[in-house]
Length: 188
Image (cartoon, rainbow, N blue to C red; front, side, top):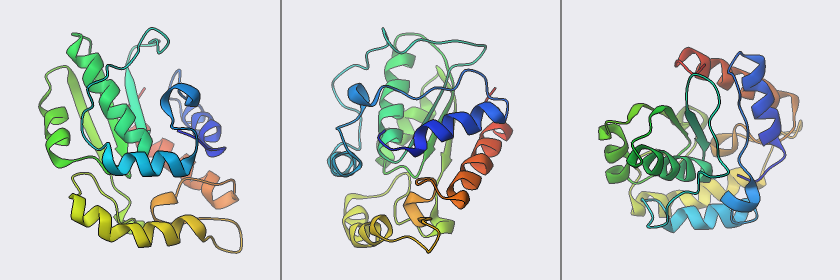
């Protein structure tokens, strides 16, 4: 929701042929910083009671896809549910490195107006978070998450949960591989 890497992620999607990608307005959808978003995601992992405001969101192209990463995945899930509840169709909901609660994830999978829910966990990169994680597991993973957030390699590349963040050459390459994965999942 907040980070310099987001515009490059949008560019990567566009490069791979995904039409009309755009980032949400972080002043509306973010808590104001990566740290605040992370803290907020620790307790806001289920559907909230506030409806998403789609008057500024819009929809262009033949598909309506929502892609969210980390805290953004929680916002994307909430937005998808709100949009689907308004009898609109969400073609693809992609949750990347998502700390979403299991019950909410199941509701998303079962909603008739959400065609596909794709979960892309980063366990293979050492991410302690995953879709369906329990609160005790989340708490136990916070130390590892903190280490991953504060450390990077000699090229400025982060691993684990923060695999797609940063401006290193490796991070930019990872975002393009992710965009290719999204294309293969059916995002147009």
